[in-house]
Image (cartoon, rainbow, N blue to C red):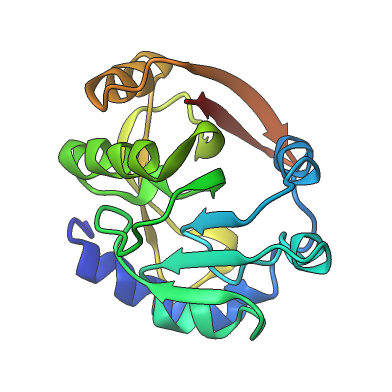
Length: 195
């Protein structure tokens, strides 16, 4: 099982070109979040940043953070691309809006997940809002998923709601909500954080 971030990064680099054309429209909770963005956006685990073109049209900047250089190559040139681990984001400024879609379930350890959440807390303005999504499954724990017919399996950790609540509390995040939302055939946890 892929248990190191380096192995996980290599998998994303390998599937980048195929994956880059997969997502076209945001699921409703993400669209709802992006529709209210009226300032620069930090997109952590951005991949090709495919959902965010309207933000650029409004004159705001998008900072795209991803561990995979190959994924970042697929994002448009107007986007500020930062190749970095989600647990060590080399940015000092704060953001009113932070998006982290389908990322937390790829982090291989509890420590990584807590540090990632602490990074969101550090980078969020006092009036800021963050949206995090995670795949839901009735089966919990670590799994390898051969998703979308790709030749390379991807590492996932499937959470219980209680586990997510515990992680947020360990990261000292107090103001949050966790709901479930169906996107096509997949159910996702939608985690909203406010400072």
